[in-house]
Image (cartoon, rainbow, N blue to C red; front, side, top):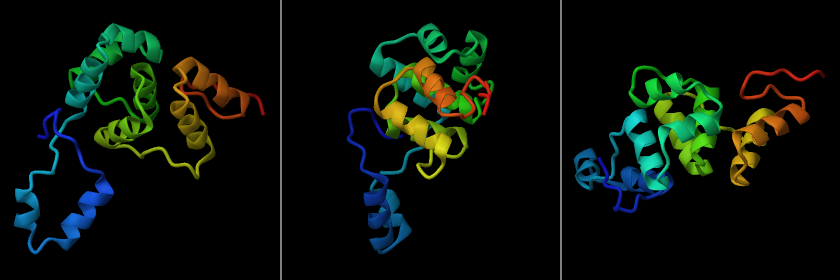
Length: 150
C-alpha cells in the first residue's frame, strides 16, 4: 500500500509506464500499485481533514448507523450514498472518483446530465444539501431520492 507521504502518480502516467515496461515484474517492482479498501480510504480522508464520522453523517445527510457500517466495512454505500459521503467529507473530484471506484460503482461522467451537475457542485465545494438543491432545480433526481416535478 502506498504511504500517505509518498506522492502518487497520475493513473495516465502509470499506464504509460506499464505499457512501456519490458515485463510486468519490472512494473510491479516499482511499487506504484495500490491495494486499498473503501473503509481505509474513508478513514484516510477524514483523518486528513480532522473530521469525525459523526460530522460526515451530518454533512452527508445519511443515517449515522449507515455511515458507521460503511466505515466498518459492514456494508457498501452504493453510488448515490458514496457521492453523499464524498460531499459530506468535502472531497475533491479526484477523491470522489476514487471513492466511487473503491465502492465498485460507476464514476461520475460529464456526459451524463445528472453527473455533470454533481461534478460542477463538487468542483465548487458545495454541500450535499446545495447539490441536491441544484439537482432539484434542474429537474434531476436528488441524492436523497426526491424526484422533481417536470
